[in-house]
Image (cartoon, chains in turn blue, yellow):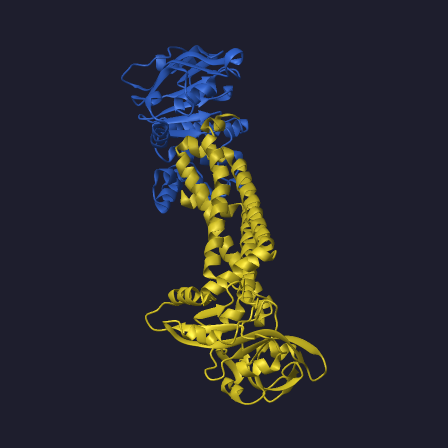
Length: 246
Length: 377
């Protein structure tokens, strides 16, 4: 991997998968109103792994939530696959997430009473795919991630790294175009975290797919095609991998 | 997602068992108390059901079947004269004192039947012949009487005992529905009943009547009342009149109603609280499902499926336990226990309410849940 270099937030119009313009978001009201996002512009291209980094409170997770359509921005527009998220109804957003987005959470959020394969199949259950077919597809994804021996294991019997791999399988099983990851290595030790992100980037880096990773973990910066540094609700700096500039 | 919902439910064994125990207890308590209540109500109108006459004619101010206000003997002919009456016969009914061979006394419900027709006689004959009541000084005793008057060794066909110092001989052992007061039923003829009882100006307890073909019992009862001034009721009307009197004038309704309400509240509290805890503990998981693309309606369906699945199981187990209780504690008619389909439907309705309300609390929580919660470490 080559270290990133300072670059632009914007991609060529034809290639972007996510385009966010002028995103603002504040929490609270009146005197207690705290602006968290102060006019963020960001583009994410197809086939790109974008890291969102910055100190706590800089607005990374809020921006991720707005892009995911689970938090309303006060101003601005987010377009994913040419669809304006803000213009969708609540059920439209839910359906959009179901059909186009994959999520990986810091705390995995696996269902404790479901096996690894069943957990990975949950997005397919939500889509209405028949149970046996859904589990078979989930098992296939888990096998590609080296989890073939743990398909029937409950989350409590899995290590942190294995749980996160199940979570990645869950995010990928529906073949989403955009993967949104919130601190995917925060609950893992350094080596496991490195391996998990390596795997995540390997499966996530697909010509028709993009990955956005919110992270504090500087050890995984090398995996990003671009690194967006956020500070005080704004994009402070963009680093682009040197190899891409050549 | 039904599969996921059920695995979430059955996978959390502690909460599942807690929910099941709550709903089972609730069902069992309501069914058991409801069955005993209805058993008591059945006993309260046994004087009517044992006789099984289409129409009962009596004093217009009577409140219930055990409240005897005797009529003049002429009442039988007065009723017979009403158009549409097929037949009308007298019936004596009263509590008397029987003296046993060992010198003990026992109160009995003496029933005097019309000697020519024996209308109102018991349907189930255990031993002997009811027709033999036409022989002198004879009676038929019900199964409670056999127990209360000395047991099968002393009370059998051909055995004798005294009613108000008159010796009577048993010619039949019959089965009769127990009475609320639990007095043994002793059957004899109307004329003999008059002879066995102390002198009174009037002794005719009831006139039993039947409508001619084409006339409904309700219609004839109204006609008898209108033309004679007597109180006239169909068997069903008289039964309900008795039940309402019991509910209004005893604490039975309030007592059983309170217990049933308690069962409902306990079930509601346990199910509601457990479901809420279940939801709270899985809030992040539900948030994740919402983020992944599960709608609130889908999550609500999951909660309802979980609730009604455990509800149906609890309903079955609860009814099963109540039935076992009824079959053991109530065997041989020792306890009034009458499990009827309206009661089971009613309990099903109550359980439906418990499940719906307890689910509603959780669904409300999930509806308000922001999926963004999963992005907060």
